[in-house]
Every structure is written in structure tokens, then in C-alpha cells.
Image (cartoon, rainbow, N blue to C red; front, side):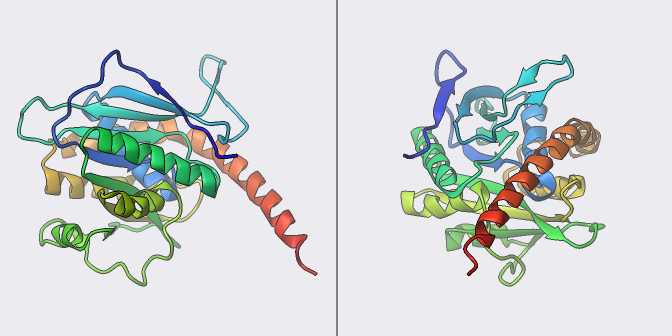
Length: 266
């Protein structure tokens, strides 16, 4: 039975968006992408458009600072710039990613359907490249499902590393599958991957900053790079507690998977 995603519209009416860029930032290595997209949501006071729920979410809840439980969430926001010469935004963020292959693929299909509904022809996914040390100045790499789009990101001045082949292996999760399926659905996409320390408790603040610099340099969104440092530190503090909790859940799930694999060894 396929995982079923419940989609809840959070606005009374759907906005009319101008050539929106779709930027994904779900948890991953160093939470680099999530930190960057959460900053964009706060910076632009983006409006919540949809929330997602699936019974394939991890079987646990958060306890918030009011001592009440909260379900894990994935949410889609939008920002309309009202003809200011900047493309509108669709921003995907959340506490978790789909936890298995089938739910990841069905979720990405859902996302691409929404993107095409808003005439979004370009998707940007984000993630981290785990290093064995904390990088002083993280480099940002790029791959794409479209050669011409990839060439745009290789332009001098953006600060994107031109060669990613041999640096990363498979891109696992939504950040990889979304642009892979996008190619089949006629939606161009790039994945921006920033270097970060590969420890599960580390949050890649510097990597997120460099990723936002690339986005600002390419699209001139009006990101306040001066404000970015202070705001991201605040987001780091909010994320730390949830990062620790979900790392424990992931470790438990990994231990169960290893036990199953061991059962097949003769």
C-alpha cells in the first residue's frame, strides 16, 4: 500500500505567483539546507501555504516549551514580491524527511505536482557534504538535471565549485530524488550542497551562510547578509534540541535495520 500524504491548505485562497522559485530545505547532514530555508521564511515573513502529514512519519512527537506535544511537520510557505522585479518563492521546510524510499518518492511526486500547479519551472534543493573536520570556509557545490542550468551556476562570481563528480556519492533523500524526478516531469532543478562537519550533533551554520550567498548572488532576492549571521545563530539554538531528539530516533531505526540485515547472512 502506497504511503498517503495528507495535504492541508493553510490559506483561504491560493496565491497567484510570478515565476516562483521552489527552494527545499529539509533536515540532512548538518541541517545546512533547513537552516538556510528557515532563515528565508523568517527573513521574508513568508506565508504558510500547505502542511503535510503521513503515517510514515517517525512514530514519536516533540514536547514543546509549554510542556505540550507537537507532531513532526513538513510545511510549504510562499513569498510574493508584488512586482518588485524579483521572482516569487515557494519554500519547503520541516522537522523531518520521509523516512523510507517509497514515502520519499510519493512525497516528491506530490511536491512536483504542486510546483507545476504554480507554473514553477525551477526547483532548488539543498543539503550538506559531510566532512571529517569543521570547514573554516565551506565550499558550495552544485549539480543539476539540466546542463544549461548547471552552466548558469558555474558563472564566475557566484562562488560555486564547478566540479562535483568524485566529491559526493549518491544524493539521498528529497534533495536528490526531487531533481531526479523533476527531470522526468519537465521541471529543471539544481542541488546546492555545502561542506559541513559530518557529526550528527553539528549544525552547519557557516555552510548555510555560504549557500544563502550563492542564492542572493544568482537571484538578487534581497537577503540581508548582515542580519543573516545573527538570525542564523538564533535558529541554531531552536534547532539543537530537535536535532538531538531526531538523531536518537534515527539511531534506533538504524539499529533495527542492521539487525534485519544480519538475519540474511547465512
